[in-house]
Amino acid sequence: GQQVMQIPQYQHVQEGEDFTTYCNSSTTLSNIQWYKQRPGGHPVFLIQLVKSGEVKKQKRLTFQFGEAKKNSSLHITATQTTDVGTYFCAGPRGATNKLIFGTGTLLAVQP
Amino acid sequence: NAGVTQTPKFQVLKTGQSMTLQCAQDMNHNSMYWYRQDPGMGLRLIYYSASEGTTDKGEVPNGYNVSRLNKREFSLRLESAAPSQTSVYFCATSSRENTEAFFGQGTRLTVV
Image 1 (cartoon, chains in turn blue, cyan):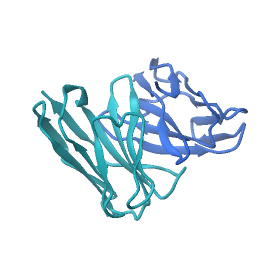
Image 2 (cartoon, chains in turn cyan, yellow):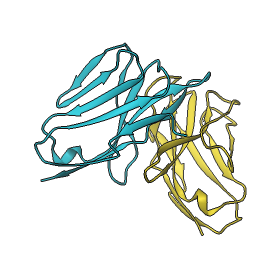
Image 3 (cartoon, chains in turn purple, yellow):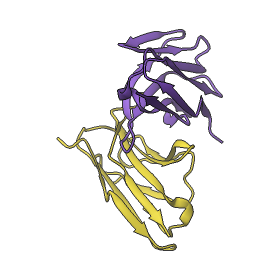
Image 4 (tube, chains in turn orange, red):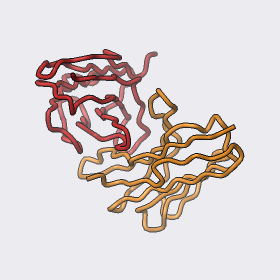
């Protein structure tokens, strides 16, 4: 089964509300990456976190890597319609460090 | 500079037909990936290639074969297509393990 789970699967917010998606791995990750996929598009890299407990910000987006390096979160403050899309976390797995993606969270923003 | 190019963009196959999805990159990256995307399932790794001449199974390799004949190209072959292989297929590359992945535009495949 899927080794990297994300919740929620879908979130609908009013423009201006905050949004958070959570990523949980069954095993420890050496790093976690986050991607955004606009409707009809392809995934685009947002950020990579490497250190335990690391927090990074990109304007209204805040990314966290858990202390145990098994979970991560993406928080968007004051959502805008441009934030619409599916957000994926991804991490390297196995001996060859294959990049495995989470199940994704689809964000809908109502103006 | 095209980045990652996938062909074709759309394809309809009949059950049992075969086809090859092509992926080419001009980024001089070592690692290449094939993913499939289905509603509610996220992106699932089919096959991975860490370098020219090497391939490794991903999460859902059954029914697929791959070929990495050179650094630029990584092809995905369906020998006998099944309706369960209806999906959007993405090729991706990264310079090495654990680094940012760059995706192609995707191939929307329907098997009837």
